[in-house]
Image: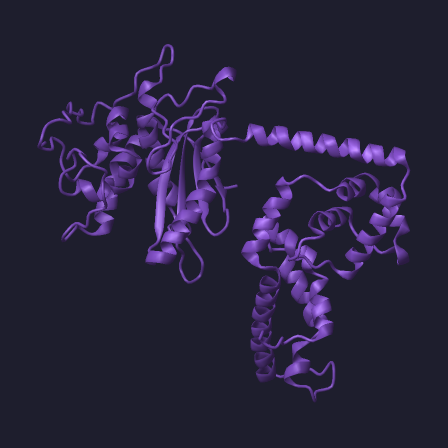
Length: 447
């Protein structure tokens, strides 16, 4: 037997009037405009103070203790409303149905509403009901689904639209059918273009933020760890130039991620890492030729797009600048069973000078463990996929970071590049990209 509902029939009807707005936010995974408006209407119609203090006359000013009690009750009521809407519509099932609605063939009534809503349907609605066109089309798309309950005004609109379409002339119906066939043909052609094997590397690069965000959020829930990931490489979005990005999962009690807590995150981490990437792939990526745009680069085991810069060739490529004050990097024989470091362990400046073949032979997964691995043997070859090792009695973290960042930062300042920072926040993670600026006078900025 289902539990007794805490809402009345009148309140259920009130909530159903917001179903369509909730479903639109659910399909877009964005409720930022829904919940504030919904709560405002709810508490205006059903004030919580009338429930907590039913004997108080309406409009009575509450004292501090009463206001605190009402505030706590409103928070509990918001949680109840959250659960009720999600349970009534079914979050996961509705998301699956929303995807199905976007890919299935449209109904004739959808096409009819799209073509003739303003001209024929809206004027025929009784009482001049104001239903927006996009809401009407969404109602037509979801009508007939068992999990969907249309609001009364939308149900009346759908009934009127079907009646009008049934009595339309043969000419109107032919136009609707012709448009329906065009839409079906366009969707089938679009689906064919999106099949696996036709996307460009930039397609996968654009997916990295949300994909890695979901992945690390799941790991955070399972392990209670926080993650900061640096990544980068040549990107078609920057004309083939190298860009560096960081993803942060895990925040303080105030909701701040690592890049927000660390005031100099860009200069201390992103700019040195960008300098390192410039050494990995100094010439960026050649623009794809038109006939090659459909080819897909193989992906590494870690999920990153594998761009092998060591195989790229560019006519008249200038040599990579090497600062005379830095010690040269000795040749490395990866087949040797043991290697003795010829660079002081306390200096990690040689990381930026590693040749692209060595970096790619280690794999993308090794990049984020380089600091922990270098404490014992900075030139130890990687014979198997690297794993995160815990160093016994390591030096203080600031010392390690200063040793890693200082030489790279000085190298960066000697080359005197300028950087431009782009920042976006998909879901609950922050994505920061540092890109080379075409204007030497332009300094670091956020937008």
